[in-house]
Length: 197
Image (cartoon, rainbow, N blue to C red):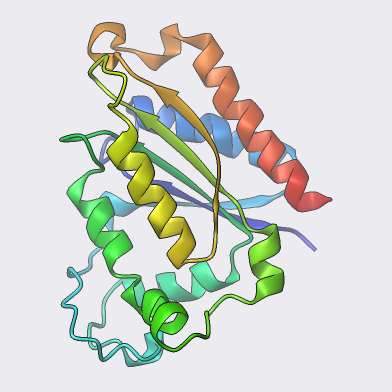
């Protein structure tokens, strides 16, 4: 049975540097034998979380929009790739709003004590985090990584590995960094290989 990976693009630039790295990781996962669904978060139509705490399960979420079908996909996926640029020392607002809408998973796990993901599922689920940043600062990825780790815990898909490249304001084009492109492919392939074992 094929394993399913969701690949989230947090940048609205579908042919930008972040997207290029994500596409390499996707190629690696697919070469390892897995199926991948790519979701461009910037083009989803959804409202921000209202934090009204009615979401006893995702069927009772008061907001009905594109997120409704996303919840099922996140329950069924085997692993996750998140690719995002760093913006204002964190992740882009639309991606953060997307993550915040998983309040339904948070409520299930932390308020009711019954995660929507079984312990068996969690054991095999992993998150690969890919990010680029314009600035060449040693702490430039800290905020984005903390957010990704927290999100991974909420959806029971723990942070597993990463591909990071800062100083993109100088580099401009990620294709001039073949070692980073290769790293994205290798990490994607490794993720897929682990799922197929």
